[in-house]
Length: 258
Image (cartoon, rainbow, N blue to C red; front, side, top):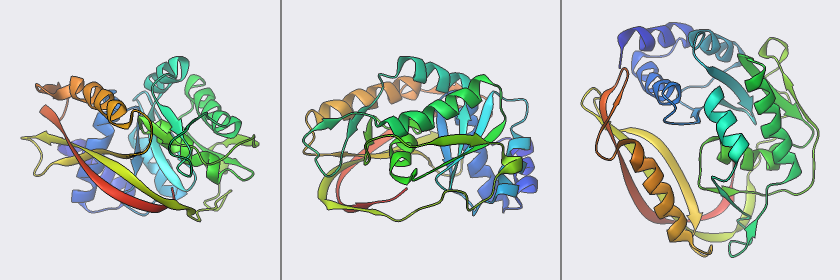
């Protein structure tokens, strides 16, 4: 990892260099459009740290989004392209895994807010509103390029985008888990391997209900798209030659949370 970026993150977030280096890899993946967005979970972030991270990303085509007490680094053009074609995922209610679902108006409103922030060249924002938790589950999955997105809400909700300079860390939070019946899942984990990294870097992890129609075909298609980026090796600025590797396993889940 290029020392300047990792050290800039270390100074901005006041985290250990090892944590900053992992976050720097995530930023490279977004900056190179290998990912539409990444979830920042390497440290306990605050609004102040989110603002500081936005400063680190200044000059890149990147938007920092605070949604459902999570912070996402989003590539504006990658998001806009995905939003305009929007044929990249399948929706399913985990309580009814045999049936395909549709995206709720509330989730659509959240993503539309983020799209508006992208096209308006906003650097950072927080999405707030009334009862957004359940709608945010699907929005987060869509942001993270999950091929199967869990939708746990119907109907609409009112949301808006607030600049981080006006945001409060407690705005609109409701992080209780959603209880579901026990669901058998296929867990898919993607790792990035590079000689410039001391160990494999986790890129993506998602689940697909095994009872879902065409579950294995959906995973196979998603794996093909991911491996097209780096199966035979791909050069990424700051990381050198990289390769994506995919591992699948079976798990069980009885609740969901962001």
